[in-house]
Amino acid sequence: NQWWEVDLQESYTISNMNIVNRLDCCGGRLHDYDIYFYGDDVNKTLVDEIYVAGHNGDRKAISANYVSARYVRIQLRDEDCLQLGEVKIQGYPASGSFPTESLDTLTVGEDAARCWSTKGSRILMTSDTFDWKDSHTAHVADVPSPGPGKLAMLPLPKKKTAADQTFGYPDFAVEVALLDRSVVIRGEKESGEHKMIGGHVIVLHTPHVGQHLEGALLTNMGQQARLGRYPLHFHMSDCVHGSTLAKNVIWESNQRCVVIHGSHNVTVSENVAYDTKGHCFMLEDGGEWDNKFLYNLGAKTATNIKIRDQETDDFPSTFWITNPSNHWVGNVAAGSAGPGIWFELKLRAPSSGLDINRGINPKFLPLGTFDNNTAHSNGFRAGITTYRSGYRAPPGTTWNNIKVYKNEHSGIFQHG
Image 1 (cartoon, rainbow, N blue to C red):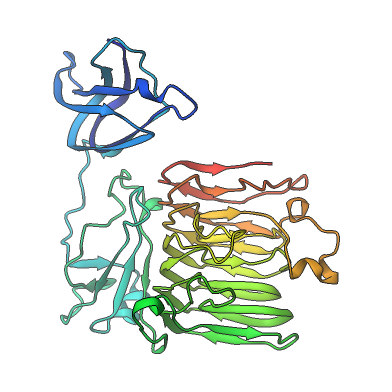
Image 2: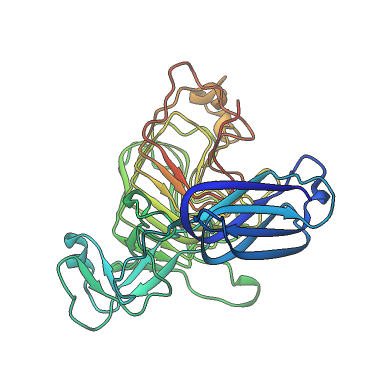
């Protein structure tokens, strides 16, 4: 019976596996197989086995129950040809261990601990797995903080530390953000057919006027399937030098997050978007120039129904980019049902009819800045992608210091 085996070079504690089938053809050949786990001893002792019954399908997630093994083998039970697309094995060195800190403390920087120590404050912790939905919230408890840089929390739903399935590398620690703000903009909750109709904030046709919104919590905002009704929206305002959307939280949006449409020179910085629907931080028409997206965090970006046929919110990205001649620095896409960051370069009406955009094709425009951005725990296709429209970037175009990990499919998927 045909088999495939990998040597991990040392013993690992294996938490789970993802078996990806061939997607071009012959997917039916991967069925009814065993997974064998062998130890690190000279006799290569069998320490555990898992039987996977039936057809694998395109991909299958398998819990390995934290078995410690060096060799992992996949073997068919019949005499068919064994064909695999990809095998992902997740775990950490068996010689290491998880941290012993308790589940009711969260270690953060001392500055954050001082600012966030209010009883009842709600804290977001992003996903530390391949699952885009695996983010969690917790509350600061009514007890003194247990030490410098630590917050006393109500019990966390699960342990989330730098060591969880990432071999202890601090580069893979989850992001932590405060979800509460003193100023709250809340859409009225309705039921029935208006359940997904919340509030919206729009800056409408205000050229050469600086607009500012900072430090607000926006919840139940956005109106599902209604064009132009988003939580924060600059609409056809032309050049608005000095305008800022900063340090806001968008939580439980019904449609999108921060939308820049036909407007230029807006700075969108240090905002948090959590549990939202459709594209999140986005340029709407491809006719937006020199806007800055700096140090924003998005997590749990879910699919949404489409406003109209040409939209792609049913395949959402946390950062949706239609024109590369803008600036993205230090942003984190920490869990989208689709790509984390998607260059879907296109120019469409009404921006295509403006003089500033005549004769341009965003697929060939120079990139403004794309530095120090992170994409992890995202779903279909890639952490960062230029597919389907493609990007034929000018020679010398660079993405600097990009960090991409733990995405369900590709890390980076470039398409010209």
